[in-house]
Image 1 (spheres, one colour):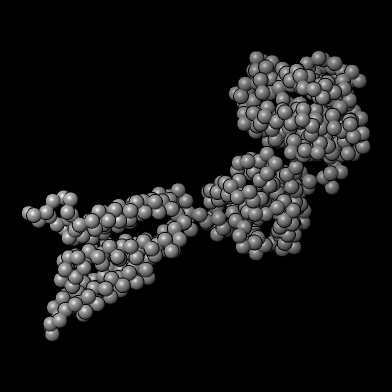
Image 2 (cartoon, rainbow, N blue to C red):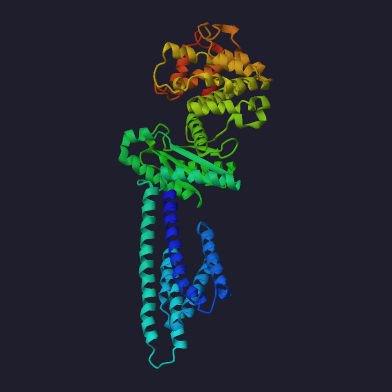
Length: 546
């Protein structure tokens, strides 16, 4: 919508410029006639020097107009100076072409029309009255006859100036109001009467650019209604729509004046917070969450949680996040974490890769490769983030020594690095892989290990990454080792990697619930997974869900 407005304004600017050029053209005609008058006894060298000055002045005015025409932030002083210059040129033309007897009095109409459209009816009427005052004053001052025919004629002309300004100004006002109304319809969600997804995307792009230019913080909140599908199944979509409208009103009451509240889609909402630090965003997210929790929605007692609540994800536009898409992905990842933790909570985006305190220069040097994977397959990137998180939960639960925890986290972050060598078609495939494709996919642990091996300081995680697809019974790949032969941390990584694969949405498989995934892990103890580590992993995740 903004691009349409800009295109319209550009067309109007061209029209304004054309009108002003016409005004200058007509007003300069009598001036040129006066100053460039050549008699039989004169030559070009005797032409009044004022002619040159006049030409230079008109050229300067045109140049001045060209300079300011594309300036979207034209200040009032500049506009006033422009109007005064036009009045001066028109007045001079009338004076040099006969004053009250001039046939060029009509040239004021160009100024009246131009500024009425450009500024509005009020400005147009003021310009019309000013032009009328000049013309009628000339008639009264310079005409000495008892019957002032010029005054009578100019009254009609001046009346025309005012009427044109009023009619044209009214039309412009109505047109602008109509455009604003249509813009509102285009920007607002029809159900909730807050901004829609299209407006959200456009606003976020603008705010991201502003944040980079002005070096100001920008935060994004994504929130989702917990168990909303169940609510719709119980009460129907009409009741569900009523909940969405109530929630939108509730959100309006809790966001700040300058925050941009939008319906992101379905039961998801978004809030863009400009010039807002992470801590303030989390506080606002918690305020919103609490207000929804305390509000009574009809039938909420039938939901699994006994009340209708929301999960909230918060992300900030910094720390390697330099575009709107990445900011949305981060907020979505934080929302996923809030959902994972049994909902009705606020989570902020945290990435081990953005935490400089736990990264050394060796790992940071691999960031470009990880970003390449992200651009080719966003699932792998988000999968890695979640696996890192699960490994951190496990390490904290079993109280791993800090150096062991660091190795596990690093290994989790880099375990799929070798997928950079896998065809993009295979990575994003929605069907079952062929034998050839599967053979290519199975190379990624060895490729990952080979890449990491070349980085100084990361030698101690090579074995973890290389063996994260080995099975406890020896039927894994690439080495086919089993049991205690497999690195202990690699055995943990195998469980975390498998758990995320089970609980993530993929086109070719049904997403398992956490309980179903736990049951599957238990069923695969002694075959796929280390029994002791499997139970510890389940316990660690279960505690985090409480």
